[in-house]
Length: 555
Image (tube, rainbow, N blue to C red; front, side, top):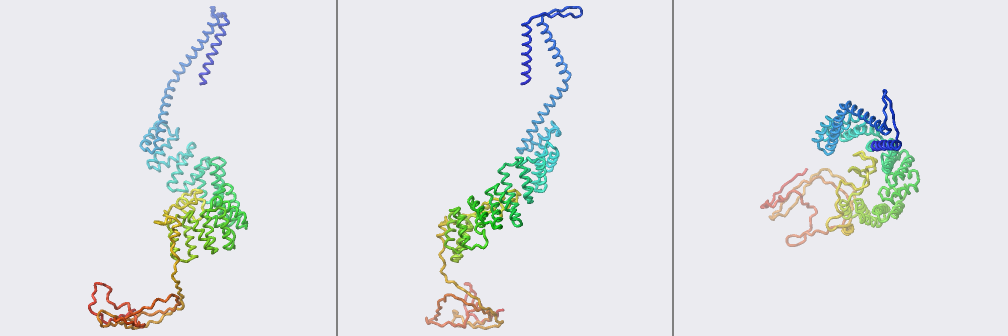
């Protein structure tokens, strides 16, 4: 465009010059080699312009002819390069689509048209083609060549990192990520990978420093960087809690400033403050977390904030939590637990049933079973609540990558990802309805409670147990058979173990024995029916004749 404007300006300048000469006519006289040449000024200017144009055209023709071989070769080289780039583009698209045959074909064509030294992307095409063909060793070699080239270093390191992760070589992957983060701190994947590995090895100071560098370089979003730094500060505070409560308090407080709703940071800050006897500030932190989202761990720590409190004092603190977050299942369950400890069983039962109506869960029904055991002690009613607990949804827990942990962890033990644990219901077990059939709600489950058993309680108090020496004893037993002839059996009994106990039980009704004519007979206390000596208990065995006298000796 600029050249066109320049050409137009030259034409306009020539036109203006010739117009100026036409308005001012004159004669031009030239004597050369004894001859005099006269002409007008306009003709002389025209001849001069034509001469200059002829010289320029002649120079251009000579230049074209002189440089024609080079121009021709450059034309064909450019055409070849264009075809090579077209093949490279087609090959990369085919590799991305998973077409191994087309990718391999385009790779061979690109290598014939372009030089790998001039175009490093040929190594990428070869590496991607080797990957989709399953030739991982060849792909790794290509990535190593790319990692040595300054133009493709980051691309090669990423390929090596992904290959190491695929093979499970975590140490090699960590080294590639660290190298990429050092060479190019602006790469988000390298920063996050190095951050995860430093978190796995508990290098909290190094991880926090890397987060600060990434945030300054605008590699990570500000909100994401603040969240990850808060998690790292919480992890460092957790390690310091036992040995350095003050340092743990400072780190946890700094984490809460970055992420106000980070539950583990609030719990650690409150524990550190409670150890410093600063109950008011620690309780304030827990109350703020509780208002945002009720959590069982917050409730447990808040209720038991001060050692030495009575059960009634803990019940008062639980009632305060319920006042802060009314009509909540966790609040009601907290009050029910505290009331159970304070032996306020009616209050505990009402709160637990209300919690079950709002959100039936395993822990609520187990709490109802504990209340039932403390209140009635009825096994049937306890089993009823235990049955409801088996069918109810599982309680939320700290879960990451399908693994549950009783406590919060900063890094997942499976994937090594930072800030992977979430408070949610585990998915490893499928939970059924609260009750099947006609019991479709907690109200129906309460109505289905069996009545309290009225069976008298039997209490057996062992007093003394002593064993007599082995002494055979012969007992004569007369058994009435179909034949009127009596059968006498002699049995040698086992050693008798005497146990004196104290039993309180209702006396069973007296057994009445009558003879053949209906008269009442007095049972013989000294006659004992033996276990052995009868006919086989088989309907296929006939009892045609009476049994003879048989003697058994038991050892």
